Amino acid sequence: MIDNERQQQAKEYARRKHRLLALDLILTAAALGLVLTSGLSVWLREVVMRATPNFYAQVALYFAIGVIGYGILFLPLTYYSGFVLPHRYGLSTQTRRAWFADLAKGGAFALALGGVLSTVIYFLLMYAPQWWWLIAAGVMLLFSVVLANLAPVLIFPFFIKFKPLDDAELVARLMRLTERAHTRVNGVYTMALSEKTTAANAALMGLGNTKRIALGDTLYQNFTPDEIEIILAHELGHQAHNDIGWGIAVQTLLTLVGLYIANLVLVAGVAWFGFTGLADLAAMPLLALALGAFGFITMPLSNGYTRWREVNADRYALTLTRNPQAFISAFEKLANQNLAEVAPEPWVEWLLYDHPSIAKRVALGRAFALNASAKN
Image 1: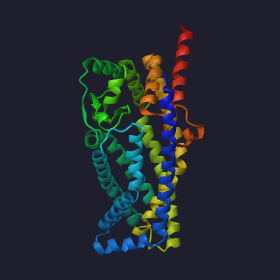
Image 2: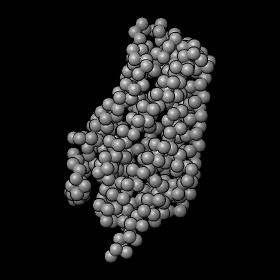
Image 3: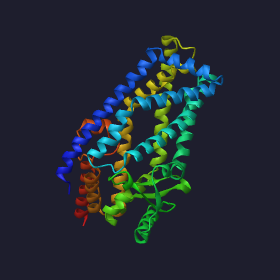
Image 4: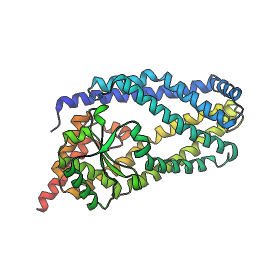
């Protein structure tokens, strides 16, 4: 049953998050534009060139200064949206110190991975200026596959504690479900989400021998075995439909198009801003601006594709478990516990949501139940 009081809070919370997202996008675009037009980017290029003669060290240093500068400039907005607001609505359990620790760890990973990618891109801009965008898309595809495989064992444990689920009965039940779905997993784990949030979540993460079931302890404590089973069945639907592979393929295609358009923007920018060439470090903010604008413009397309795959996974879960009541109750509980808006405005769902609304998912469960009743 949907809690009406929680729904009022969910609507308020959603509106605030959407306004913060819009503000973040506007300010980010304005900041990048200012860096480009004010000459700050050229000045920073000269600073890093004096600091080291090595071109790739210059790329890494320029990127690091840019990312750290952005992080410091936008820290108040990040703090309000990531710490203050979730605490105000009872969604966060983190202390301020723990939140800043996670922010620092996330920043370190962004610097490391982004530094490697930016260095590769500038190597390609220097030595393959006509085809850099095509080769870079291939490199990013490789990165996506490697990260999807290694994240459960090398990255996620830095942020969340994992341990094997000690509920033998539930483990056996979930493993039987994976067998029925013809999927092999390397164990069932719990995530210590309660150290960070009151929200519930579950995932089937990893590829190959790192594939595993992960249940948030906030889910395990508050949901019935039937509800947990159908949530996992939804995740197994993604495996059955090879959604990870298709998702990587679609994202690679979008990345390829985005990089090609960024290439056109860079070519135009060389003449407009007086850059020395495509590999001019001072053009890095223009590259970021072009890719960011492309990502925003194509967001409805990407989200629409993901929502379609989510609906297919929901149908798979209902067909596999034949338990629409557990499906309905699970999503109603998720709406209440996670403070999710049940029925957002259609344009908001179209633009921002990568999952169907709770209202649509509950309606799907009820339709399945009616169909099953009619057949019986």
